Structures are given as C-alpha cells and as structure tokens.
Amino acid sequence: MSTPTKNAFLSVNSRSLLPALFLLTYPSATLLFHGAGSALSIAAAVISLALLASPRAWTGLPSIQWDQVDIALCVATACPVVAVLVGGAWHGGVVASTLDSPSRFVAAAPLVLVLRRCLPRTLEWADLSFALAALASLGILLIAPRDWGFGRLSSQFLNPIHFGDIALLLGVLSILSLNWWRKDRLLVRVIKVAGLFAGLCASLITGSRGGWVAIPVVAVMILYVRSRGKSRKWKVLLPLTIVAILAGVYAFSPTARDRVGDVSSDVVKYTHGDKDTPLGIRLQLYEAAARIVESHPLLGLGGNGFRNSMQSFADAGMLTPAAAQLGRGEVHNQMFAYMTDYGIVGGLALLAIYVVPGVIFWRRLSAPVDPGRRAALMGLTFVVAFWIFGLTVETFDLKMTVSFYASVIAILAALATYADTKANREANRQAGSGAYSEAARAARDSRP
Image (cartoon, rainbow, N blue to C red; front, top):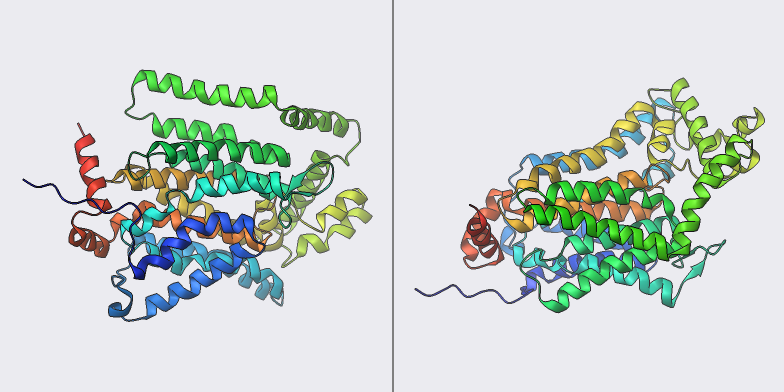
C-alpha cells in the first residue's frame, strides 16, 4: 500500500501567494516600517472585500456559509465604531478623529472571512512570522534605535511602551509556535527559541515594565493549558524552566532590577505627597477617570471628553499640572479611556474586542487537529496579554497598535478555526494528502 505524497514545505499556488506573503511578513513589517501595519491591514481588508465579492471561479475561494465564528467576530469588530457613533449622537456630534482607531477593528472582519477559507498549505506561512518579528524587534534596537529620553530606547516611530510590549508578546508567540505544523527542523527550532530571547531582551532594553506584569499571568495560563494530559515530570520541569528564565533575567539585568525598584520608590513618594512620579501620575489620572465614570456612567463625556476635562480637574486641585498635561495625551488605561468618553456602552464595546476572540480561542483549545489547538493557545495568549497591557497604557490610541491587534486576531482566529468551516472541510478532503490530512492523522494517532 503506497503512502500519500507529502506537500512541499510552504508550497503555495499563484492564487495563494498574496495571503501567504501577508501571513509571513505582516508582524515584521509592522515594526520595521513606519505606517506599514496600518497600510497593510487596510490593503488586506480592501483585497479581502474584493475577493469576497468576486465570482468563485476567479478567486478559488469556497463560498461563504456563515457560522457562529464569522458572525461573532464581525459583530465584535464593529462594536467600538458603534459605541463611538452612539456616544457622538447622544452628545450632539461625532468627533471625526475618534472614528479612526475603532474603524481599524472593522478592517479585520473581511480578512478573517477570507483566511478561514484558505487551505492549510497557505496558512502554514504564518509558522515563522512571529519568530522573525521578534528577532526584528531586537535588531531594530541594536542597529537603528531612537533614544526617547531617560535612556529608553525604541524604534524611530513607536514609543518604548508599545514597542516593548509588542516585542515581549512576539517572543512568547515565537516559542509557542515551536513544532506548530510539524516537528520542526533544528534550524527552525533555533530560530523560534532565539525569537523568545530576542523579544525578552528587546522588552528589557525599552524598560517597558507595564508589560512585564503579563509574564506571570500568561505563564500560568500556558502551563495550565499545556499540562493537561502531560507526564508528571513535564509538569514539574516546565514551570521550573520558566522560573529559572525569569530569575535569570532579574539577576543579570540591571535594567530589570532598576525598573522594578522604581515601582516601590514611586509608591513611597506618593504616600508622602510626591505625586508626579510615573506611577503617581497614573494613579491621579485613574482617580479622575473614576470620577467621570461615576458622574456620567451611561455614555461618558463624548469624544475626547477626558482630554478636554483635564484643565478643570487641574483648576480644582484634583490633578497636578504635570498629571493634567499628560492626561491630555492619554488616560494610561484602555478601559478608562473608553468609559470616560463613551460610558458603559464604550466599556462593553471594548470588552467585546477582548472577550469574543478570547472565548473563541478558549473553545478551540480542544480542536480536532494540533495546528488549530496551538493557534488557539497563541490567540488566547495574545488577547490576555493585550488586555493586561491595557491596564497601564492605552493600547488602542495609536492606529498602528489597533491595526496590529485586529490583524493578528484575524490571523490566529483563522488558523484556530479553519477546520470548522463546511466548505473548508470539503476542500481539505479534496486536497487529499495536504497539511490538514497529515495533522488530522497525527491527531488521531496521538489519541489513546
């Protein structure tokens, strides 16, 4: 009995070349080129809409048969725009600039609809994308950094907080992609492990300590998910390895020790009346935001409401001049940013951006094929980490970060759920010996 011929690694036909290259290059291009993240996400949305509207004979894509994942993601990505429009109508006019960032979420909807209908051999091109981007993040800081003040290095166009958070997350996704679609060759393993350390190093260089809070939370979550069905030895060694890495970073990195020590110093200063430390300013802004939400709970103050209220808070002595000045830029908390401007409606819209993809990824942790399960874990890690980042900084105040979040969610959601669609199941059966068939056989063979 002859064995089926395996597809060539990363094989792709001419119709699939564009989405394949997008999957491979998008994370790296976002960090390397100013405006590339936003431009590529918009271009991907436009091309995806054109593909969805074109005859099937031209595109080769299966026809759309809407399922719960399609509907849930499309509704969730539309929620922020709806919140802005409702809030604007309530307050007598929509501030045009406030629609810019929320609209980037909507751009991810057509992208996920197209990617979910691609064959696995096209989706496989995401295999090295996060590792390459993590390596690129460190390369930027070593070759062409920009000093943003106080020794904080980052890229030429992205501030150290956002750059450090994204680099850290890319490093985690890099190691999670180990043996994603198959057992990786030695070189590929080296690249993915190097991606982890590159992301950690880049985050340390930027000094973005807010993102470090995500490390223990994400580590515990990954351990919980990956430990199911594993041996006792594995359950002991993996946590010890993670603890050893974190302890080593703290022990051998003066930057990490100094940034952690600054937190306790800021707390002491705040209790003694010195409120103009980085932590003290954040606490002042959070208190002001809480007052606004308490007085305007349903629909907030309207577009740019928090920013426009800073002078009145300063005049009332509730904010120091330094805090009021920084508050005109951002609240330093993504949930407060939406709730002060758009109230509970805005808060629920923001939660939809986190919760809906998070629930989809959680449910796909038991997907029938291993590539889908791994993508689900990566997606869940991505959502949880971004939510934690948003506790100390506005993650969606920049078009680039909104586009990056929405596009990566679309990519990982497609990778985690591609086997769900009826049209894809039929296409995969026709593909015969494709990557999906290999993954499915491997999954069946691994079952007890």
